[in-house]
Length: 148
Image 1 (cartoon, rainbow, N blue to C red):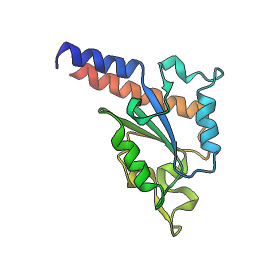
Image 2: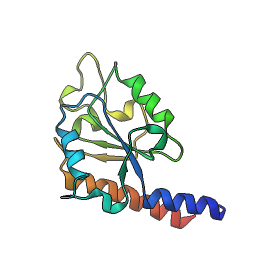
Image 3: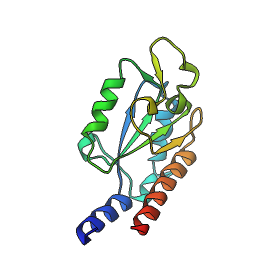
């Protein structure tokens, strides 16, 4: 791995840009994700910045179960993200389908459509749990980078 690639990877780990995507949640997890970005919990201390387009995002944060209507849209958003890309699922519904699992239009959790890097369970997941999950993801990426 050349010095340019190492510098790019260092920048991605130290300043990840995230995209929030709601696949049909009840909005409780969405509120907690946004609360984690406020100054009270300060997810930005890890360099995290919320982006509005998948073409600029490194991390996709998803909440809610995957329905038949949103599965193709979720996959399209994931495919528009540049490599390397990571997916963090927040909430029980996003992890496994939650109480909606088995409904006629619910496929299951996010991992039924796209690969997932980190799971943050809870109904709803607290801002502290979201920060912990993102910090552990960044820590594992940093450890992986150090091995190379």
